[in-house]
Amino acid sequence: MIAKPHHALLWILAVSMGALLVAPFLGMQSISPVAALGAGLPETLAQILYSIRIPRCLLAYLAGGALALGGLVLQALFQNLLASPFTLGVASGAAFGTALYFTLGFNFAILGVGGGSIFGIGGAVVTIVPIFLLARRRLSPTEVLLAGVVLSMFFSSLVMFIQYLSDYTGILRITRWLMGGFDVVGYQAVLGIAPFTILGALVVQSNSARLNLMALGDDLATARGVNVRRVKPLLILAVSLMIGAVVSFCGPISSVGIMAPHICRLLVGLDHRRLIVATFAGGGALVLVCDTLARTVIAPYEIPVGVITALLEGPFFLWLLYARRWARTEVLA
Picture 1 (cartoon, rainbow, N blue to C red):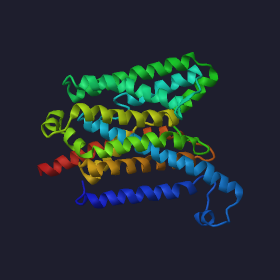
Picture 2 (tube, rainbow, N blue to C red):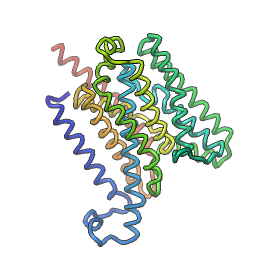
Picture 3 (tube, helix red, strand yellow):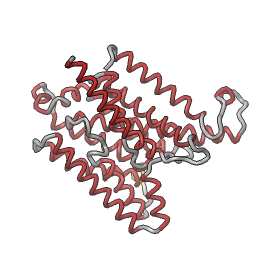
Picture 4 (cartoon, helix red, strand yellow):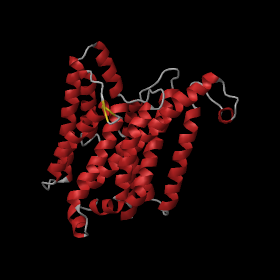
């Protein structure tokens, strides 16, 4: 952790906003920001910028922020730094719900919310509720994490079973979606996940002080006046809303819920009043950069963004192990 967390938070926000401003102009066809701000942008490039790249960058940023924030909240609630939407099975449950929606051929919306999002959120809730109930039985963080891994494997198996039952087109669609991506035209997907992401983030931020206490244990939080029985389900519901909506539109993008919270925790410290903002911004920037690489490294072809984030996870954990060992050596010295 650096000496001045407030300065680190400002740097994270600045880098995050910078990435969000620059990314739409990068791609197989470079676009000049000067021409975009003026009237000199050809109609074709204007269509690419405003109908494809800006919606895609906004979607990547919101998805990354939601996944990172979901990981941070789960780590605090279950007092386990390895907890994330993937290790606890939340993303796999959401993936199963959405894959089931695709396979059944449904096409409906309730109060403007698409059926894919409803099934994705439902899958996330179905997964996280057993984990929550197990955690209330005083299981150790390791046992809760193991239960999450088992549920993740179970729902991943169900997704594979759905693929097996699908026709060739369905198999290709589900396989590509499982790799994660932001292949969108227009703002429908952005508007689809934005309400859930913003609502979830506001719920989490409004409980930031309580999260500081709950990260130290439910007993301590209760002793300090936190209504754990009310706050914990509320935060779990907020995470389920965010993860379910993101997975239904973008697929299960791995690693973000682990990497972004750890990096931001090292930079801004353990106070969730700062850490929540930093993690959302950092996660959004991380996924945005990964998506920019995904569509530019081997242009005109694209790499699924989930492949990029998964490739980063191995080196990240090696770095994290080295950093912790170095910090332990410094303390002992």
